[in-house]
Image 1 (tube, rainbow, N blue to C red):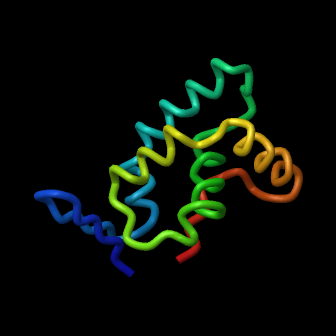
Image 2: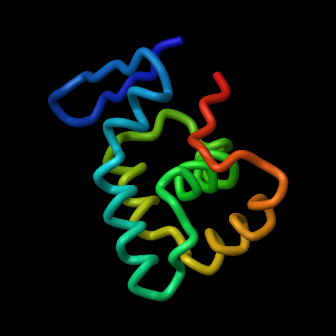
Amino acid sequence: MLYNYNGGYMNIEFGSLKELYDRITPALISKKTEIESKGYYHIKESDIWNYLTSKKWKISKELTLAEMVSDIFNANIEDINAYVIKKISTEMREPIFDE
């Protein structure tokens, strides 16, 4: 399955969700840094990714990279924390690439 980004003047195709994850990792790292500044040291980049893919992006269609990055930066820290606390004991905390 190809994941297509068609924003503005460029058309970028991702061969997998892993490639897309790698592309937006800088935004995930930035959000993690913000979260740590609020005292939440247990949240990882993969937790932010998994939260957004399961809660927000699952119902979205044809997101642009800009929209995804915006979602990362605007994600509610308390909601991410609640998601992580609920999942931490039952699931692996690595990026999930269900395709």
